[in-house]
Structures are given as structure tokens and as C-alpha cells.
Image 1 (cartoon, rainbow, N blue to C red):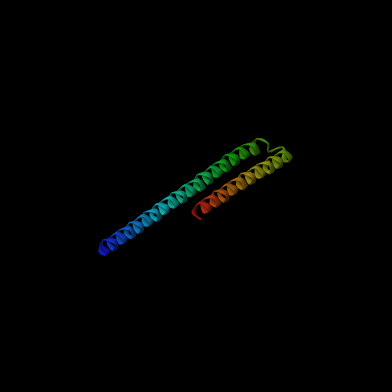
Image 2 (cartoon, rainbow, N blue to C red):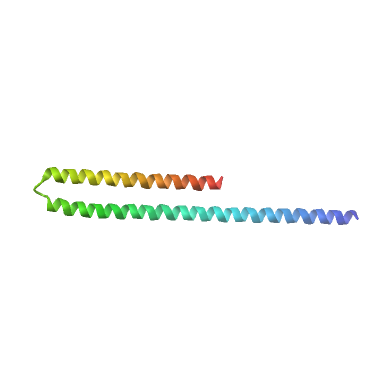
Length: 108
């Protein structure tokens, strides 16, 4: 009878260790998936910000060429474009930081 209790205890312990290992592995897989989604969002958002900058620069250059005789208007356009670009940069950085914090919290 004692041998059967020992075998049952060993079996239960083995099952517990196996279940714990599976839970750890699943948690690691989920963490890796969150990391991948985070990295993809950083790259996607960064690409969109850069595309926006390219388009803004292209528009600004066309405007500058068209208004070469009006230096004050050119200066105002450049200033407005720079401010808009900076606002997009700030939004992008805020997005990266907020997503990073969410990923880190989900890992904790």
C-alpha cells in the first residue's frame, strides 16, 4: 500500500512539473508574440511618419518653387511644415513609448 502512495505522489509531482513547464512555455510564446507585434507597430508607424515627411517635403518644395518671389510666404510655409513634422514626430514617439509600456506591463 505504501508503494502505491509513493508512486501516486511521484506521478502527481511529475504532472505538476509538466503542467508548470507548459504554462511557462506558453507564457514565453505569448510574450514573444507581443514583442513581435510591438516591433511591427514601431516599424509600421515609423514608416508612415517618414512617408508623411517625404510628402510634406515634396509639397513644400513645390510651394517654394512656385512662390520664389514671396520670401515671407516661403518662410511661413517652411515654419508651418517644420512644426507639423515635429508634431508628427512627437505623436510617433509617444505611440512607441505607450506601446512599449503596455508590452512591458504585460510581461510583468
